[in-house]
Image (cartoon, rainbow, N blue to C red; front, side, top):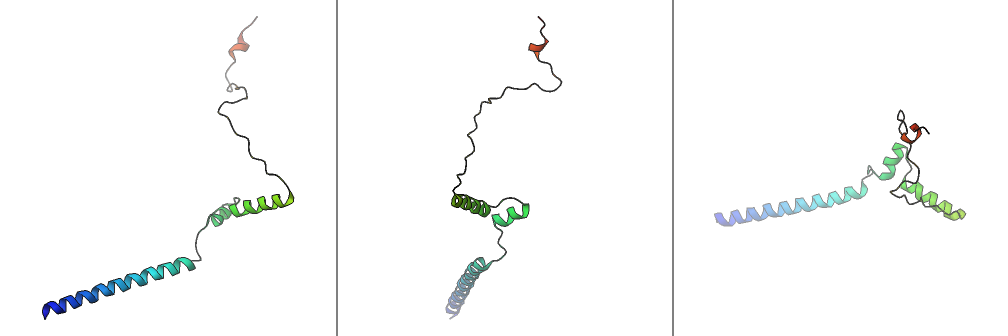
Length: 99
């Protein structure tokens, strides 16, 4: 009789744990769907005063509707095409030579 009571008690405890966990998961899913205080990238960027992705998308759609073509930035190269300028306070060895 004692073993039977112990197994019944274990069964009820296991059932209680399973039911508690299932309600917890169900409540967590409902709260995730109804959470109003979700931080989005748009909210963060707008608070910083930066352009949000939704504003960029709206601007691109507006430009396309007006028939404007969006220019892509040029591809940068690793080699600079501008001549190097000397640092302030240094002299150019080519300019120091006298003829």
